[in-house]
Amino acid sequence: MISFDQTRSLFHLPQGVIYLDGNSLGPLPIAAKERVARLLSDEWGKMLIKGWNQAGWMMMPRKIGDRVGRLIGAEEGSVVMGDTLSIKVYQALASALDLVPERKVILSDSGNFPSDLYIAQGLIGSLARGHELKIVEPEEVEAAIDENVAVVMLTEVDYRTGRLHDMKALTQKAHSVGAVTVWDLAHSAGALPVDLAGAKADFAVGCTYKYLNGGPGAPAFVYVSPRHADTVRPALSGWLGHDAPFAFDLDYRPGAGVDRMRVGTPPIIGLAALDAALDAWDGVDMQDVRRQSIKLCDLFVHEVEKRCPMLTLGSPRDGAKRGSQISFLHEEGYAIMQALIARGVIGDFRAPNAIRFGFTPLYTSEADVLAAVDILADIMQNRLWDTPEYKQKALVT
View 1 (tube, rainbow, N blue to C red):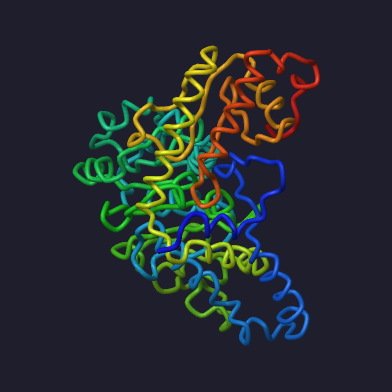
View 2: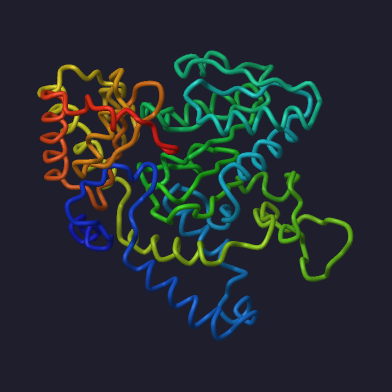
């Protein structure tokens, strides 16, 4: 079994920085630099277009999909990579709705990432078949799942608070009334154990630039349960989702299984970086990651509450009910986070008032947590955030 001291050495972590924002963008894996450089020079540079066959580029979305699938409890051959998370949400939701054409309600919650809700709204408008998006509070989801619901579309871990949905229980409730599930794992994959197969999830999607460290804009993934994979209709019927792309038929014929969820040309450079990033997970047990994650988060909460009483915990106190992130609330949250970043503690801000911190055992230590709290306490106790420069909002918060 690999230790977290070993995995920490696999990442480029700038000197003097305590990085607590891997829940938004993971740090650079050292191996990714060499892997991408080799692709550019030895594959693209020397093979040119032959790389699609000789370097195996065409099969990378499935090969890497299986590597991601291991971390999310997916059956082999049920995950494929490509495109962005928003595209994958669109595909999964459209296919899910087709499975229950007589129903019109998409159920989600107010803790879902807004992009998922935007995608649902746009799809409803395009379909023009009378669908509606019903949004309830996270605590009300289970009670709201009834015979009118077509699809339950949820993000497992709330992006602002870290609140964790019970995937297995909610999927079971959905199935008991004939509904279909779409799970967004953006803040789950690589953060905590996920068991898509055991939960009998129908569809799942996720990005790979957060806890999986694939880099900015890294390709997303889509999971389709094997029981649906050969029958679902892909809403985006792209040429690489065709049964025989290079036959160049004028009519679309869906490929076998999850391959039908492929759309366009795969982003080979991004996939190469992700492939290298996933090497850090070889030999890592997600249960060990989960235990250490809860330990780090609990330590952070305890120390912050002891030393910064002016901050209010915005995440569940019980580690079993949250992901691998902690939010504290303050009306000057943006300025506080800018003051932290200026001192080398990098988290982020989420409107209206949350300072958010991600804890990733692969490279975050207890010493990092304690040092971060020291700086936060100094900033809060001495109001070091209270300057005009820290209140000037940047484009990305």
